[in-house]
Length: 162
Length: 162
Image (cartoon, rainbow over all chains, first blue to last red):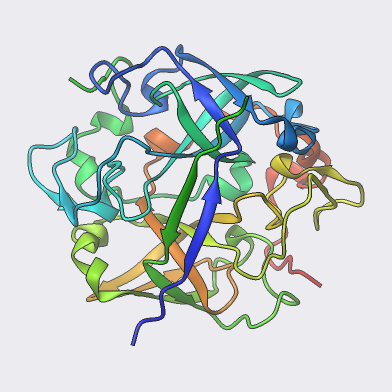
């Protein structure tokens, strides 16, 4: 018998971007380093932002709130064949959590300004974590099906959903 | 007026490690590259693991299910003074989601074997994502208060909670 764990979460803020629909939205933040987003953290969580200004990059965990359900296999935008959902970054996940490392430009009061935004406007924010290469940059040597899709490990700077 | 978004999530599996209490558990997975964990994915999600075997590293998002509430400021294990919770990786977060990049050693049926585990035994798994440096390895040039705590950007291989 599986024991499922259920949990309730709530947004700690909202992400404001210029993307109001999926078309034209960057596939990943790294493909849109110039895209600026404003993050409005709900005031009750503002004290938790202390010392964040010292970091050049932060992780945003957020809700893919426009995803409708999940699929065990999806055809990701970088490929023409299906892959297991957990081998992709597609929003159609059992728990629709998105994760993007963005550059922190400014932290002022309850508002953060970041660059490298790939979220839709109004995306609910779930968590912020400092990006620390010693923790987060593992010595990756195999990237599965992405290998032939990301030439020399790089992605086109302007790759967008279409 | 803030508009909070509430959401329900449930575990997609469970993480099995040899750590049954916080004492002795690695502070981060990168400090415990030799620690093996077994991940039992609930069978209804097994099909989503297709193609995962081609990746050397995967992100695990999981629930800090032993955290009791959250604090706006915490004294992290690598420091002696308090920092805003979002400037730390402490479990005492509003949404207690943990995030670790682990090396994938084996993917067989609904069971994954990984190295670099810093979770307590029985930790509920929320999501698995492929680790892709082009997406995830940003050009970080400032790590805030960690700067003086992680000599030369590295952490002691055996740093544990005590």
